[in-house]
Amino acid sequence: MAELPELLQTADFKSEKHVPVIECPDQVAAGQRFEVKVSVGKEVDHPNTTEHHIRWITLYFLPDGGKFPYQVARVEFTVHGESAEEANEGPVYTHHAAGVSMKTEKPGTLLALSYCNIHGLWRSSKALALD
Ligand code: FE2
Image (cartoon, rainbow, N blue to C red):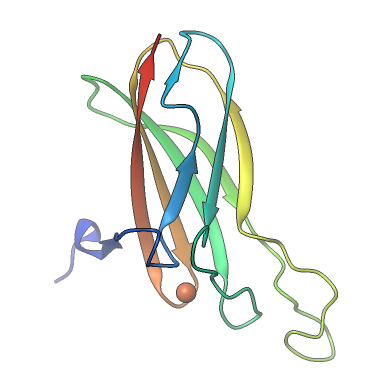
């Protein structure tokens, strides 16, 4: 029987198109709002078609010494060329990238999880220091 941790794939985002990328300053001021960009396919494009696309990215924050992560944001990408006529004939595609504003009083780790509708779950993380 499989367990969820075994299904969370990861790799170098520079060569693997599914890995979520977390972009933000390495160090921020305590309690000051900052921007985090989450995306998939920063270096290697991921397809965005009705049949094959990124459904969502969830961003978590684990404070140093903490046991449980906090969910910071969950972004859903909900249109991928669907139409009443035919797959990929629709006029709209959500691109799998989003910006999130946040602040924290503690240093820790940002963790991202992304989901491809046919290639499953992918994870990454980024340390966040405070001034
Ligand atoms: Fe995929």
